[in-house]
Image (tube, rainbow, N blue to C red; front, side, top):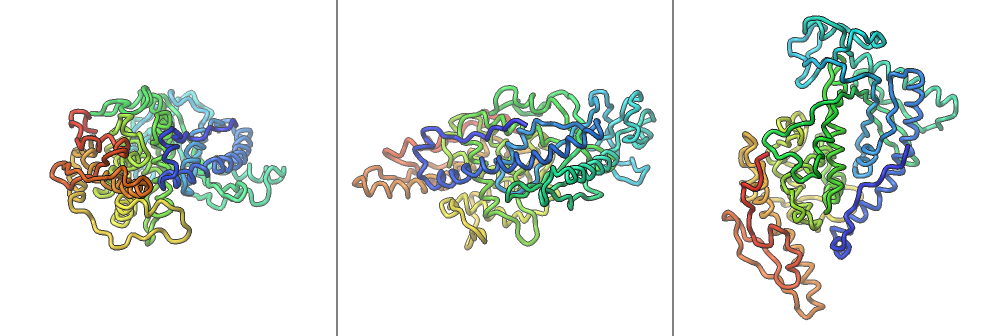
Length: 489
């Protein structure tokens, strides 16, 4: 497979000039690790592709997709040890399938379909799929040809993977310890393999997928491609990916479309992906789960970046690393406070729903970083940085707890106000750094507070003198952009 390119890193003149700041020093270490992570991925991927080639040779209906650039792109970005999702396409004309929505009453074989699940009815002329189909689903929809059964497809793929592992071991294509299949479970909707790459072990979740062309997604009440390169949404959503949801039903996966949008963000100027890198490292290092409860995932942070790209579409919003990070932070804090993170492509879906998250604990950690970032911008081993004597800011809490009905307060104007509450931390951080420099400059470049107020909230500090050139777009005049500048999402 061709070597995938690394995600880009903002190395503009402004970033280089600020490379001595704690923000850029922290980011520099993160970026320096990505090439090695990519090399580990490619080594493990070669083993996986060898297995899938053996599977394809024995069952041509399972195809080998060598285009793994999106998976490599995500793996290089992600500091945590999340599993890598690998789709195995089926040699089926997805456009010839009939998609039938599963109904709550479809319980003829004892299963209860979940929301957003489907039966995939095959053409009567496809006699080569009889061992993967059943009458389940078609009886509830008036009969007809059989439906593709994900449970049967998964079982067949699992048997072939086990057979391929044995074959590769006998042919000395695998070294002892290269691979572990201990996580292959009977009832899982993915087939998990642990593959060793040098000293690192990577988990691959293998999922059969049916691909089908569809009309590009229309974002109701939102401006298409706002903040993204033109045509990004169309390209990302023009193909549906159906993966197993249960032994009997399929669901449409947004994993690849979201990665395509993330890659589109990588084409834009500014430290957008650098902001994601930094927050993901903090999440991995200091915001982990406690007491057996789950923590934030890289998928949650990806959604936050996509929303921030839409809500802050101007290039001026992404001129420096600190300001870019805070644009993600205000959205993340709002989601944690309301326990509601809308899916970027399907806002009616709450990604926190059903997650065993300790929202209070995670909010405390994220807010502590937003208030005092310098304390967390360092690498350490062992226990995460503690957030002792934390108290919520009443004015910020009041803003964050505004109601979420009908996606109220989910627009650019609202997050502009939230951002103004937090830019004081950026400014005061620059105050400390600039005052340290001023000692060598005879007191030149003093910082003074300005009594600029937003909606009656606390004043924000702005730099005066030489440091003024570092102002954020919203700091420059202490204004909030008009609400009509953005359609509510």
